[in-house]
Amino acid sequence: MTPAIELCALTKDFPVGWRGARVRALNAINLTIAPGQVFGLLGPNGSGKSTVLKIAAGLLEPTSGACRIFGVEAGSFEARSLNGYLPDAPHFYRFLSGRELVNFYGGLSGLRGSELGRRADEAIEAVGMTPAANRRVGTYSKGMLQRIGLAQAIVHRPRLLVLDEPAAGMDESGVAMLNATIRNLVEDGATVVLTSHDLGQVGQVCDRVATLELGRLMRERAVGEVSELTAESYSI
Image (cartoon, rainbow, N blue to C red):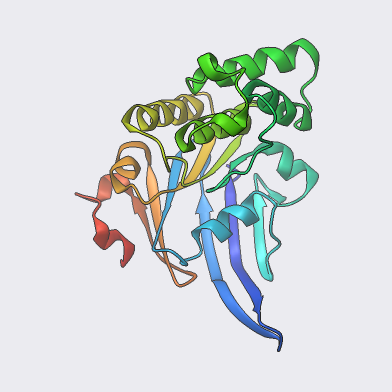
């Protein structure tokens, strides 16, 4: 079975300052994520979680090593077409309505005509944003932005959904909606990879988790192997 994500000695350096100095964000990470599951990345701020997701989504190129999405190089056109992505702090066009936003991203994903409208309506309904779909994005709260951001990420029914802190700013009902949406997508055959500081949510929705620290993979395990996810998970 082809992995949903395969990281092979994945390394990422970022330049710092003016003298050629570099900081290593990821250090030779090897990780295989099987399809059809919810996989969580844990770790403190600066551990490299978001960098992994951005490389998987094709937004960053690795310094060395490889990241493959269903067997093809991340960042390629084919890999991008398989992805849906929600960043940790989305910045959308404020002058668009929520519906126009989801239609826009659906069009970028290749949807057209009546299918685009139908898929957009389905995605908006799935995240509970139908009543506010015709409001301008600039009037949305943080939690509403996360909801509409999730809608644009799933409108084209991606095989791989990449979510960076998707529950940020959401209330209890929003988190419940998010978890239900994630599980429905997996039941339909998708793979979901997410980061979260909400360990309760991770325990509820994830099948497996991996812990990163200072750009290194520290441990990978099934959620069922852990009696309780606590803050200690960040240092294992």
